[in-house]
Image (cartoon, rainbow, N blue to C red):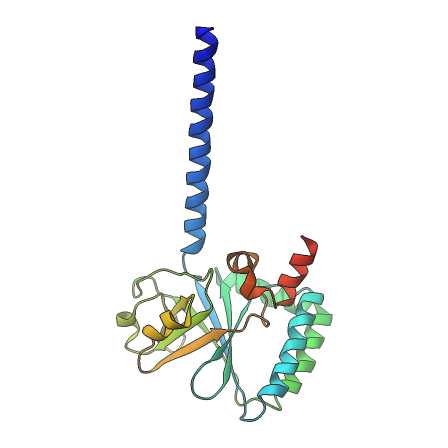
Length: 236
């Protein structure tokens, strides 16, 4: 009996150790996901909406969001809107390398129904927007500080120019040498607290864009209005 009891106790101890290790590993994975390294490349597309045309733009963009899901858009992207000043819609694409960016471009080009839809709706949106800009910025780890905390984010603050090193957050450099700092926040109060003069305060528009699964899992209530999140919820 003593031998059996000792063996049983050893089995329990090993089981408890294994469970502690699994829990610790799970917490480590969650922490790593929440504070992952910034992407190597950040693409920012900015679409200024002409005054009085916000509703027309929103109708088109909502149709695009649904079509992107139906037509298998190949890459996650984030839609945001300016919360002060002229209304602009910003689009963020994140890439780990130039090779990945080029591959995503080829994936778009190879999806003819998707490209036809995007081309058609881009022409419609052009009636309601000003000059659209499209910039690629490269991550500069030596210049920034702070973590890349996108999971659970609902707001972002972007700062351009000489102040980026002082304000905190990961820093990116555009091809013309301009630097920008990008920080994400879960609440508007947090975002406003660090929005200095010259910074742009943005709110994520969950109904648009194509969220990655981990973005949705981190804040399902927020993303529930997005077509891809709704599709996943029905499948589950």
